[in-house]
Image (cartoon, rainbow over all chains, first blue to last red; front, side):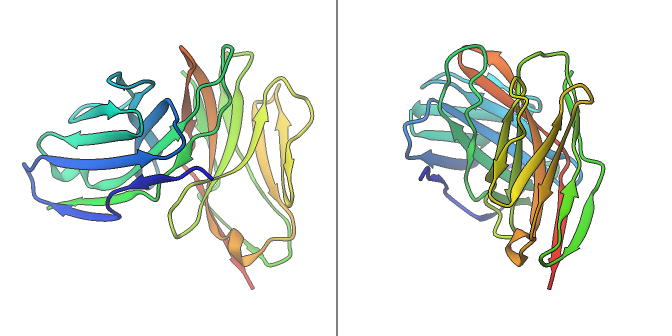
Length: 117
Length: 117
């Protein structure tokens, strides 16, 4: 089974701090994703990466950055945490497909509930 | 832009009964995938079922089946013989290609399903 591990289930930080959320997958997947989940809004894509050192902006990248130095690890960075970044953060990974669209499902971690005080 | 709409924020069903969760989407793509994901209170998002738009046959996974109406852009999930363990948030998702073997999931806002004994 695919295992996507997020380093923390709960995290409390202060406004202005630099925050790192870590994600590791064990299935040699090329694609990795960071989402935030908010009630009534579903999941929204922050950033994704399709290869080591490659990153692409998702729908809500403002206030975030990412790092992918190794294939199995994808980090989300809050450069200067703000209260409106209090949320649930989900990491996911998937394998690439062939053809125009892969249809490969994304596999998710348990999520990190981040509170910014 | 693609959108996914889940019009039922909450639903409830009695154990052993059948329940249908609705999902509609909007796209101009001709080939795409649709997914239902389940997020139990333990939080890990789990794939329930996947449907390719080119396949006319509705996907089925044990007690879970879909009613895929491509012309109507409707993708409902039917859960038969509901069990207490089906209690969860259910997300409908549309997959669109981003190019280069990477796809993007667009999620609905979710339906919270409660199964009662």
